[in-house]
Length: 124
Image 1: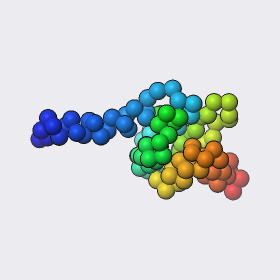
Image 2 (image 1 turned 90 degrees about the vertical axis):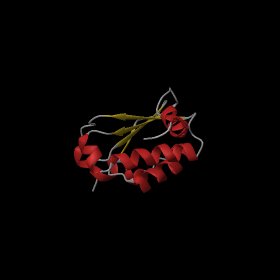
Image 3 (image 1 turned 90 degrees about the horizontal axis):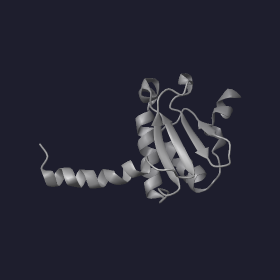
């Protein structure tokens, strides 16, 4: 069993990750975490987004949330990015490495990573 001090340290460490999932930032990242998404690897994708956004200092700009089934199970893990004044971007078939690239190029740099979007897969 953990001591009270150990539990407090864990709580403090995780607090920044919890805060990032709350709030009303201009950009919202939604990770599909239904059974199909989790089975396809959505949990490491979610963790990569949380870690990357924390690392890049984007916590004031970006909110991360989870949702259930997005409805396109064959493309899981699926992540949708909503930005004020822009059309929604749907990223599909993600893994942690792709999530890190999206944080760097899209969320930080402002450029959609088109090769990971649903439009790129539909045209194949």
